[in-house]
Amino acid sequence: MIDRIASVPDMASRSKGLSQNGKSIGFVPTMGALHEGHLSLVRRSVSENDVTVVSIFINPTQFAPSEDLDKYPRDIDGDLEKLDSVGSVIAFIPSIDEIYPEGYRTYVNVEGITEVMCGEFRPGHFKGVTTVVAKLFNIVRPDRAYFGQKDFQQAVVIRKMAADLDTGIDIVLCPTVREEDGLAMSSRNQYLSSEERKAASVIYRSMFETSEMLRSGSLMAGDARGYLVKKLRANKMVGEVQYASIYDPVTFEEIRGEGAEEMLIAVALYIGGTRLIDNMLLKLG
Ligand code: PAF
Image (tube, rainbow, N blue to C red; front, side, top):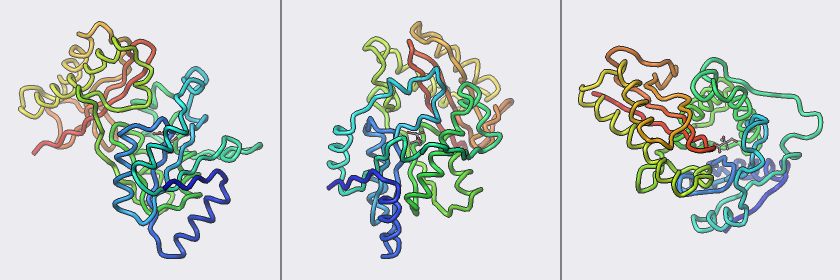
């Protein structure tokens, strides 16, 4: 059963009551257009907490004016049906005015790790993400919050924000859910034409082959960037490759030379007009 809440005070007082009654709260923040990736986070939260709150809020402050805020997929009825099939959750669906009322002026920013990778190509994006997530954390007051590994940099940035602001919230990173051909599930996959959708499988294939080469020792991390970019570009539907390389999963510095025990293979590129990202964490030894 879905309990739908729209106002900030109603959500905050519900959470307060739950905590006072000793109930643990799991939280899954989303922008809606829910797919199996989101639902896997919701299932995990339901299994680990007394109550799960799922927020659906398309956050305008994380989109640049040139980005896809207006066309971002919206399907609240479909989302509620999907949530209902998972179990009993509270759906927090605030309006934009509820989150950013007239005169709103406060922003939360994590420095350094937000200026590389996606941050380099989407300036201000992570500031919008950490601002809304900090606000949602204050409203929902969860014990645990769940994020997917597909948006690895986002999860690391949020974990740092949660720790630096002493929220006490446990940030749980969950595996990427993939389509049969390996494409990471994403609400933005809906933008792809059928030809583009077929081409998009090159991302996972190229990352996987790179990870296998690194694992077997036949490729050094310092050479992996060239190898990965070549594999991606072999598909003629691939447009701008914003980044495709091997990074330290804590600092997001590019790894050169032989490599390290833990490495992040990360890609952001365009297929047609759609920007797609993917991440794979590689643990050697
Ligand atoms: O990953 C998303 O869907 C969004 O960035 C998030 C975390 C819900 C914040 O708006």
